[in-house]
Image 1 (cartoon, rainbow, N blue to C red):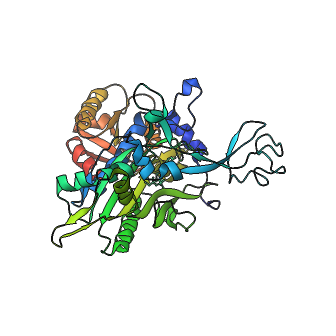
Image 2 (cartoon, protein in one colour):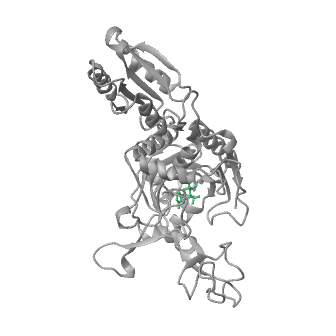
Image 3 (cartoon, protein in one colour):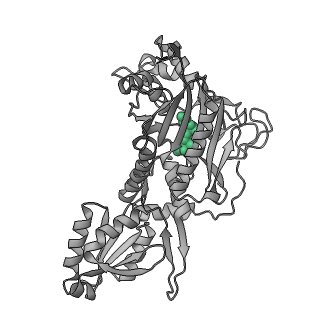
Amino acid sequence: MSLMSTYPDVMEKLVSLAKRRGFIFQSSEIYGGTGSVWDYGPLGVELKKNLKDRWWNAMVRMRDDIEGLDAAILMHPRVWEASEHVKNFTDPLVDCRNCKKRFRADDEKIKGTPGTPTAQCPACGMKGTLSEPRLFNLMFKTFMGPVEDSASVVYLRPETAQGIYVNFLNVQQSTRQKVPFGIAQIGKAFRNEITPGNFIFRTREFEQMEMQFFVDPQDDHMRWFEYWKDERLRWHQSLGLAPERLHFHQHSKEELAHYARAAFDVQFDFGGTLGFQEIEGVHHRGDFDLTQHQLFSSKKLEYFDQPNNRRFVPFVIETSVGADRTLLALLVNAYREESVEGEDEGRTVLALHPSLAPIKAGVFPLVKKDGMPEIARRLADDLRRHLPVFYDESGAIGRRYRRQDEVGTPFCLTIDGQSTADHTVTIRDRDTLEQERIDAGRVGDVLRERLTS
Ligand code: GAP
């Protein structure tokens, strides 16, 4: 449980902004919604794509020791027995016999010990109606093929990592990588969470960006663990998350997942009562997963160290970050309400890092006449070939700026009376509000330069 944060709780405002401006909608809203499942709208899908591109570039494209993979969601059911998710991926739950509601056994709102006559249901208030805790598996089950029996049960993966382990030798042999090296993938994961909530913080369907780094157990593996902790914290900072809102939390023995020898969470301060919460886990998984898969599949998953004529099962250092949860951290971190000098109405700004902003530039004719819309349209069409831009000619110019501020657009370009005479445009900076006049022919270069600086 984290302590109350000194940052304000902006979640409600973000949920409203996200819906109004087309970032995130509740799934199946017209039917009353699906619990803790969300859809990404036109701006949300761009923001999430930019975030995933930042991760893929940092983890795969910019390195020669990490390979990419896209494993299927449905896997052989034995995978989840080997990984011990069937046995261990559980939450203890209690049921109320009176109101039929279900709670986590460690829910702080439960008064007394569940299963005893004095325990009180937090929903209906009845005493003695709460069952003893029972273990509930968080994996979603479905059936493969036309027969719905126990022999055809398959699971929706609760983590993407297992797709990497079972492909360890396929990737290593096809790429001729030498240990130490990593395999990275981005993909959906599913968990039948009991206490989901806080918007997209904890959902039942989400995306993970995971990397498994294979090291020689005789190598200094803790050095790699420390290396990946540092790398991953730096990456979060490079997205613009405020350094003072990020820290590490070390897992105690009781907190460690069944596969982990050591684990640190990168936590972000979400503000309000949520406070510091995990956005990424860096785990030392030892040889647990590969050894288990060897055992259950009867296939060797050993690396052959040719120079030393040695075979071994590598240790794994895992970095596992949620795309949706990081996106929420980015929104919380970027949200500002500001007063503007000389104006009665303030403005709402999403101060997103330019590389993440869904729209890079707004293009506006000052008024809808005197040839301005034609020039502005031509400019927008020209820029669109390289960057996501938004053309807007409706309403007062101040309003149009505000609309772009609210969705994080870093620059706005305006074509005014002077533009038609001297082939210039003004470029307005979202954060400083400064406006500068530049030659229209230089707009592409200026934007590229400022977006990457
Ligand atoms: N393979 C290791 C693993 O899955 P985890 O700590 O359970 O580790 C890693 O999950 C990350 O996935 C978390 O830090 C979080 O960002 C994200 N995540 C996990 N469960 C989630 C959920 N129900 N909703 C949204 N994101 C979730």
